[in-house]
Image (cartoon, rainbow, N blue to C red):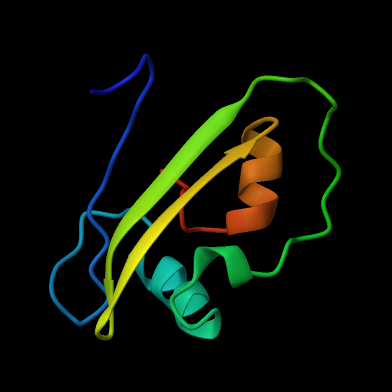
Length: 89
């Protein structure tokens, strides 16, 4: 079930075509985090304190591991700081 404003893309990091608009950057960030979005470094950016929650999910396979990541951020800026290009679409 999709919620209001829900978006999704396919990210493929094995050289096959991907529809993610920043696939190269997102794959590089995931590679640096060993495929775990929770291990991505948080960028030091200034975000407003506006509370407009954003829920993100990523499911797939990295190497031979199943990835199932879900997180809620206070707003899109905080999401972007924590996940870089991964959810930048």
